Each structure stands twice: as C-alpha cells, then as structure tokens.
Length: 296
Image (cartoon, rainbow, N blue to C red):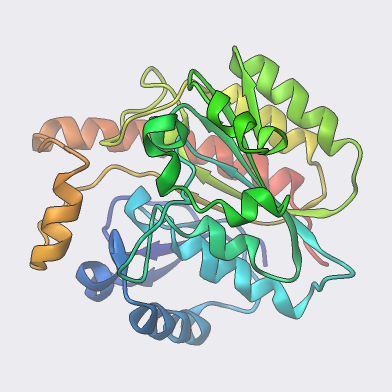
C-alpha cells in the first residue's frame, strides 16, 4: 500500500523498484504545461480509473506537470473535511499561484488547492523567483494570500510591496535556507494537522540537480529535515521537477513555453542530469516512506 506510483507522461523518471507505473504518454501534448478545465477533468477521470486505492509517493516527471498535484490532493476529500483539515506543504522555487487565462497550468494550480474546503493552509517553501517580486505582483492571485490560506516562504526576492497592501503575514522572507527551515518547523510544532507534501526539485540548487527551470537555493538536507519534522503527519506526497524536453504541436503552448527561455539539452547532458534526479528521488522516497502515515 506504500508503493510509489509513476505517472509516466514523459518517460523521465527512470526505474523505481516496486513502483506502480501508469503509462500516460498519450496525454503529454494535451496536459503538459497547461490545459483546459475540461481536459483536466478528463485526466481526473483517467486517474480515478487507473490509480490503486492506496499508494505511496507519486512521481509525475517534469515540473511542467505540477498542476497534477491538485488532482492528487482532491482525492483526499473522502478522508478529510473542514473540521478535520489538512495543510499542503510545497517545495518550489516558484509560487505556482499565477493568473492563467486558458484553464489551469503548472504555475497556477496553488490557488485551486487553497480553495478546497478541507485544506486549512498552503505553504510554498523556498521561493527565490521574481514571480513574487514587484514587477510580477499583479500576476499573483491575491485572494488566497488575503484570506490567510497561503504563505510564501522566500529568499532573495524584494517583497516589500506586500506589506504596503496588507499582506506582510503572507510573505515570510529569510536570508538563508537554514533560517527558513527553522522558522517553518517552529510554526509546524504548533499544529497537529495532517500534511500533504509536494516537491518540485527546481527548489534545489544547481549543485544538487540540474533542471531546465530557474532554480532555488535549498539543499537536499533541508527537504529531508522538514520531512523528518513532519513525522507521521504526512498523509500523501508527490515529486516532480524531472528534466525532459517536448516539442509542442499547439501554437499557443509553443508561444507560452518560449517565454520560459528553456534551451535545448544535448542527449548526453540530459541523461546525466536525469541520473542526478534519480539519486535524489531515491533519497526523497526513502524519507517519505519512513515518515508518511500508512493509514488515516
């Protein structure tokens, strides 16, 4: 019941011993980066059909699929409610709380999680992206921040604009990952609510893994420290942020993804980077298996 699951959209995850693999390559063009709400509901139905009743950590491939976390979290509504809620803890170099006009995508899903009645709070840890800086402040969905449902835990970004509009409590700025992790653990020691953990490895420094996104400053030990501190409160988890490439047939997706300025990766380099990710995945899976509840 604790076996990991691979949602195999892009064949980037590699071999995970005992993992339950679901082939979803046929969904790659439709779902990768973003999709309409209608297509997202179709994928939700497909996952409901193929996922086992009980499973461990889910690996989804590229960070371009991070919006799939929303579907995995929604599956928990059969176990939790507003009087018995969960928190969602996301490691990510980006807020994933941005406006998106064409449905849902990998950078907009967090606001939907914050709207779920059984989610009391969403924490995004490790942001160093300018997505939360002044130049991009208007792109952030402010409602969950004003409602006290979402907190950005960040470094290296000037976020003084938030204080000027009354959002100082939603922005926690730190000088180092160690200070951030320490403060977050102190906050978590004040609650016993169950936790869903979602990890995008672009939160890690380039000395840990290489991705084709801009990356943060956290080290693997910081993630493992938080996971250990949440011991037995974790009731679900996923990992994304693998490195892979895809040529879209959709003109809209080609235009939008081009804005991310992701350079082509030579095949040998890609293979080496994927090996780095595989080693990190193994350590994360071991830690999550050790500290995640088996029943709830």
